[in-house]
Length: 193
Image 1 (spheres, helix red, strand yellow):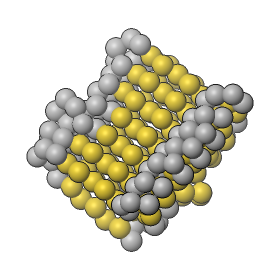
Image 2 (cartoon, rainbow, N blue to C red):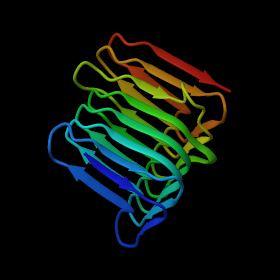
Image 3 (cartoon, rainbow, N blue to C red):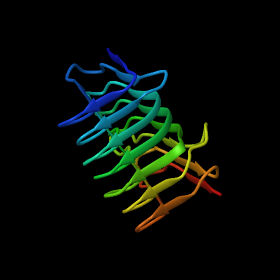
Image 4 (cartoon, rainbow, N blue to C red):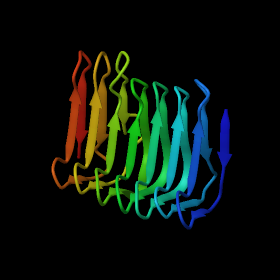
């Protein structure tokens, strides 16, 4: 596994943090007890071939010309938690592609929100395999979410279910506030303020 523990990180020409595991089922974790991560493109860019991706315990993540978080795991779970603010100044706030893995986003944006100025605030695609479950704010509240496209976009298929709870904050999008689509047999539950 790859574990990156940080305080403050700035990428002057590219991502603040970039990590890729090409070995199957190898986990990647980015964590801190605090700290601000800033990238000239994406704030944090992570790729794993079926391994679990975890990003947790940071003050803020900013992508100045891209996404705040750009995360993809080919069937592995993705977990994002306890980040005060996430901003994609040139893209999405959080962009997560799990291809059938479970995706959980908890306790984020409670200080400065989650925003995507050229995309959705939060976009999760868990389609693939037997379909991955998506849980956004269902365990720990999330803050305000804004996106130039959708506020929150969540897609699953197969048996994957979608749970979204934004009752602790507001959600706004240039298109939809919340767009949740389960293309298979999974359930959809949405709770707003």
